[in-house]
Amino acid sequence: MDGDQSPRDADSGQPILALVVGVICSGKTTYINKNFASADWNILDAGELFLQLNDGSWRDFGKLHEKMMTEMGMSIIEEAIKRRENLVVELLLDRPDHIQEIARGFDALGYLVQIHEIDCELETAVERNENREENSISAYFTEVYHINWLLEALAFAEGRIRVTVHEYPPGTAVPAEGKGG
Image 1 (cartoon, helix red, strand yellow):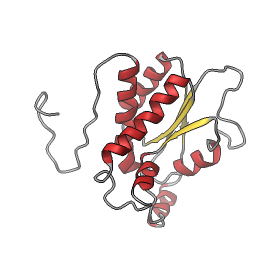
Image 2: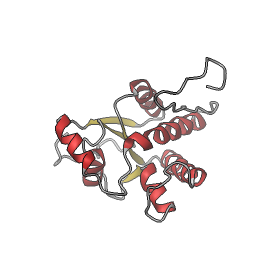
Image 3: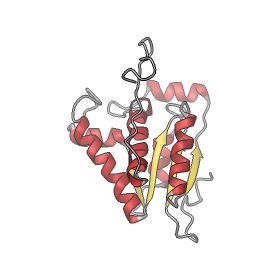
Image 4: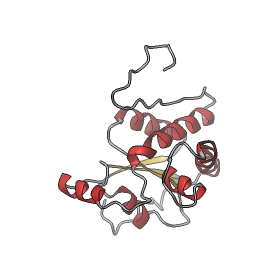
């Protein structure tokens, strides 16, 4: 999408879910801050919520304040759905099934779903990651929260059961089907 174009389809009056996707350090957060920083958009960012709760420090991300961070994230989504407001979130490209499920679910709720794919050269992404600011929390860490919250909000809005995405770090065994997974 051209940076000079508004991501909002002003003519439709339809709420928008903007999924900003790309690899780590491709510029997703910068793109969101440039194109979605207005009262028209609810920005879902687990990293920012955590920093607000943890006095601006990223240390122990996901361990401290997880319950409060989750409550805040869910509230952002549920209020946006209830009020038919626009929502933007960043995701990585490594979970296409979840992206499709989220897109289909929001489409069924009457949202116009936009996918903004951010692309950059590998060397640029590596350099950005090496020069990342101290308290810039990567989508690598926040994505699982975003996906869980979006899927749970959809389940709630559609009257279905809770959905939870489990994260298994590399080198850990994934539980057998039906045994805690």
